[in-house]
Length: 362
Image (cartoon, rainbow, N blue to C red; front, side):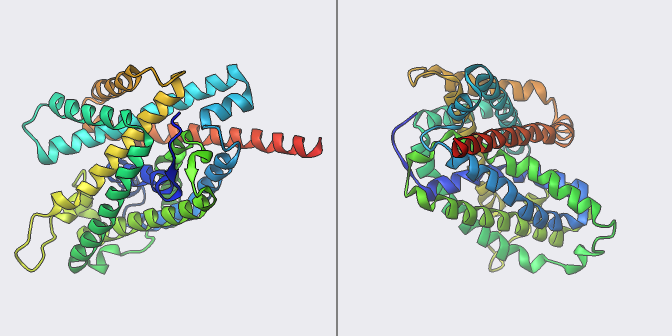
């Protein structure tokens, strides 16, 4: 693990990155399918419930500040059980990476480069990912600060651009199917998008500058991320209506196609949507960083990031033959993988709690 440090602000932004990245290609599709016209209510429910996950994250993060999550697991459970838990966590992160990379590549092929072979897209992305991971999390963090500023700017532009097309009637009828579906979608979204922030537990708190501010920054960053998600969901439903939304695989992208400024600046949706692609690239790099730093015993194993990245690229194409299979996977299997991740976090917290009580009584 590198001895270089990142700031508490950089860490907090990286922490909420999986929430933003997984929303565009996975999260929005799920909550719209479940809650339909009330999907924006589900994002509010997720925001409230998400504080449970944030509290769990902070509790584990503050324990043994000099250790990363894999090292904490070895300390808490012993070498054998701890190693097993670490490999399970790596496997779960690997599946998150699979869904993320397929979501990116599928979107690029269907919307931008329709005649470009998939192998070219994957090769190009793989080179970027491997190079990024090789530079370490410090470089990733510096890049994300710039990207996050761009994301905020593009979010403001897209919000202002969509408002003229917003129709309140598209949000009616409210809660037509009762409250069960919005609540279920909110819980579903919690597991698919918020729980993966676990990836940032790979970085020890002791390696953060101004670490005492980290908790406050994480909470603020989380609220900003969920505000972005609420606005995207709310405006997408209001601009398109549920009937049109169900026709498009990327409804939020279709909304952006409506935007024009001053009557002549049009077709800016590709520029605006880069905010999602930028986040996805960094998020994927973080997952590869997590997996490689959980597996390797020393920093000399330079080939490991390459092997992991290539494995994700290849398996994403073998596992998902088409978009239909991908949608089936993220709706029927992916949430349960994140549920398993959530359960492991609970087990870790219980072990920490028990150990702390034993030490107090001793």
